[in-house]
Image (cartoon, rainbow, N blue to C red; front, side, top):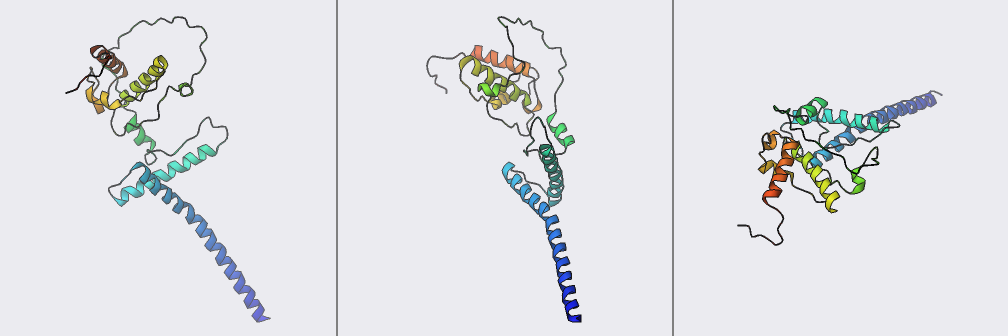
Length: 215
């Protein structure tokens, strides 16, 4: 009888230990899985940290952002979905400081009149992607050149609508060449000045009927 009780007690202890071990593994797996996701993300976006301490602190932010994204996407009736991108290791404050750098011009913009002609029915919304007038997503990196990307995106779209051809134009050319008033490369600029630069350059160098030799 005593031996039977001892055997039952041993089985019970082993069962408890097994449950504890499985619970511990279940608790550690998400952390391990998140670290693997973090390492894949680092490779995908080319993120390299100077110290292990910085890597660990960024991992904590990354994990919080990934969990926030999952919670948002799991909620019902969301109008859109979130995804993990190159900024997943930044806090909201860091992202705003790095990306929301609009410069307010010192002078008043020129006011020009615009007349709507032959406009009858205008849709409530318009998704230009469905019209094939939007090029793939581009990344400005750490350069403060959002003014070139917004100008180029608008120019690409109007080129598609007017010619039927969607052409990916160069933001870098504007960063390098446009110094109209406050347009200053990676230090920022304005769409209005950039459109003026594009129009001016087209007038200075119109399309030629033949190839031109460049020396």
